[in-house]
Length: 236
Image (cartoon, rainbow, N blue to C red; front, top):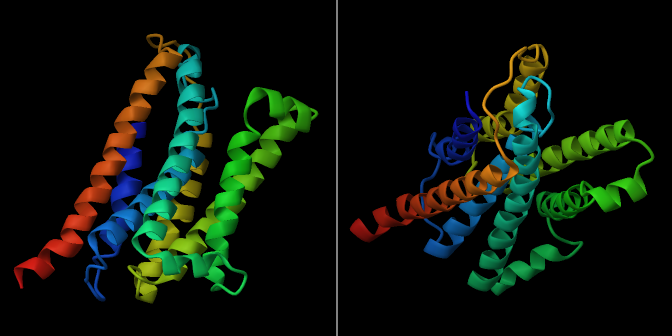
């Protein structure tokens, strides 16, 4: 499975799970699109656990491409989070209440996820990484643990909101997509050996184009999700 197919599986999987029973109502065009942008951000975070940017299991000529792609996708995930939050606040200013300490636990988990995502992304760049971490191995260990913690609180936020995952079955599947599936894939990939022969070179500039494709896919999913949620009410 290629990286684009993997992202599609994750990004489409979350909205698809929301259709498995329970209620199917639209909360408004902007509201549903904003939440779908959140689904895309969550899918991108899960995707980053698989496409780690590491050189193992890949031809050496691809190392620069995957390293840059990992960095770009982390920024893309942050971008979708910003769209998710900003659109919800603009659409309904009462959502500012969910940024207080009195907010439900799943909302506090979402705030923690945003902070962790920003910190994990910022500290992965060369200059702050070298200042904060003594050795590359320590960086990889702490970066990996922080990313795992991010995935857990993110899954808590998405499943705990219960707006679209309004049954236990759907909530469990949501956690499986965000946590269990990437963990299984990483374990499976780790058992593979690195190819002995190099493939054709892939440059870091190609990663920029691929990131744009992933962004376009994510935006399309958000638009389609909002359409599917709200068009039926117009036809009644």
